[in-house]
Length: 173
Image: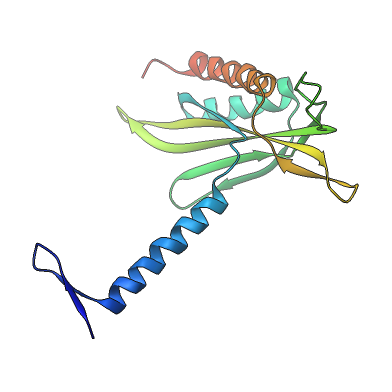
């Protein structure tokens, strides 16, 4: 078996180099599949006590008309509130934009952190966007779409409204 010697006197067999190369190649391929279109808007809303987190969720439901699909708490201390996809007319004014309809959903993620003996939660907002697009077969399906300027503005309005709610509920920690 052939070995290769590097300047720091580490020896690798050709088989080890081959396996290492395959690992990087496959990792690169899967990264390419998972990356792609950025269809999300993200903003950290701030820190709030548990009551403040509940107020943000209530405001999301009552003022922005999103219904909660899931409310999960993980052993890591992270919680995630995910809304149902909400239908909307297309955001883009571009006549070449072929979306028949768009859907948005919001995910609020909280992570427990403590400050001066208080249980505070860092709240992160994530708005996701997808569009109903025509397919080559004449049908249509929802696909991830890059955020249009209008979609980003839509999420910013909601996120900053919720951020104001967090700022108003905190005690200046």
